[in-house]
Every structure is written in structure tokens, then in C-alpha cells.
Length: 220
Image (cartoon, rainbow, N blue to C red; front, side, top):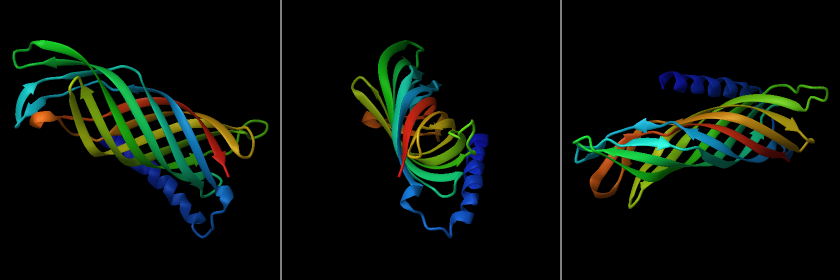
């Protein structure tokens, strides 16, 4: 986790450092864009300990199915290569939850997890490739806050405002000066946090997923 946080921080710092050259410039309408995206997400399974008043009462295991991610973002191109954006993304996953009690007896229930994330991203767009320069690979990173909720029949567990970070890599194809189609992969993770439930029950956990997304960007 420390290596992932360091990589994200270095990516953001490196990208943000280049904005100094553009700081004296005034952004025009043509520097702004909006985009929407969606696709499949593969969350990481995890085991945890369910506690009540500090005492262990169960050992649930979360076995996730493939879920989905939907999102929108608003950004600005500070230079021809560097952009900054604010993003909202929603993730949802179904899960099979195996619950083991103190006697090692197990029960299984269907549940789900969802996350609402607000992220600040820095994106580096490479120069155009191909005969017309319409193909533009890019790399980026982001950091922000996320609310995660996990539900099983009759019980909800919430973790509020966990730190989240992500790494982004993809390629865009410019259909015209205003419209770009793109596809990308993302690694997204939150810090470990406490999920509070009914009756004082709680467990520690985090959300980690790999996303494959497609989207459309419109530049004004």
C-alpha cells in the first residue's frame, strides 16, 4: 500500500509540477472539457473480523462478483499535454458473504457494496500518434474521498469519507477537435477504515478494484 501511495503521489506531483508554465496563462473556453464514462469493475475479495464492543463475534469473507463503474468529470487543459479534473464515480458490486462464528460454523448470504467517490485527477496526454495525430495515449493519477456502504439482508455497514487514490492509463481517439472517444484501465483503492453497523457491530475493511472503462470527452 505504501508503494502504491508513493507512486500515486509522485505521478500527481510530476504532472502538477508542469502546470507552473501555464500558471501565467488565462484559461479560455476552449481549454475546458466534460466527460462521461462507464464499464466493468473487478473488486478484490477480502476477509475481516466482525466485532461488537471490541469482541470478535464472526469472521466474514467477502467474495465479490464483477461489478460496474459509472462516472462524470469536469476538467481543464492547462497545456497541450497536462490536464486537471474533478471527478465523481459510482461503483457497485454484488458479493457472497460467508460468515464464520466463534465455533467455526459458517453461513452464507448475498450482499452488495457500493461506493461514491469524489476525486481530483492529474492527466498527462502524450503527443498525437498516427497519420493524423488523432491517437493520444495518456497516464494519470488521482486522490480524493469516498463513502462506502456494504449491505447484507437486514443490515447495513457504512464507512464515511475514506481516503482514496487511483492510477489511470488509457488511449483517446479524436473524432474531431471537440469529441474524443477513449478507453482506459484504472486501479482504485481506499485506505482501510471502520464500517459501522447496527447494534454497535463493526468491521475494518477497504475497497480495491481494477476497472476497464470506455468514455466520451467533449472539449469546448
